[in-house]
Length: 89
Image (cartoon, rainbow, N blue to C red; front, side):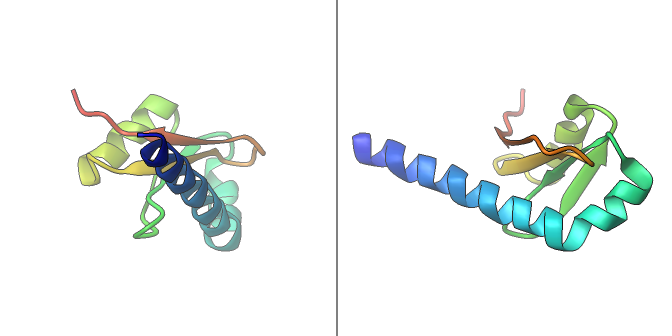
């Protein structure tokens, strides 16, 4: 059980690194021009992303396409980032 937790933590860390890399290298300049201050949820495996004015709106959009995935979430134009697990209710 301890091993499973460390694998999950590693997956979250890998997700955060890949998601941030996608944001900085491919999305940052495009999104900051039109969506400054909004949120983007990045599905790191596919590179697909979803933008919304609130965190809730952004995650709802992302969940529609990827209901069982983790997302790397960035507030566009800000330094803080989050990794979020999607749960459908």
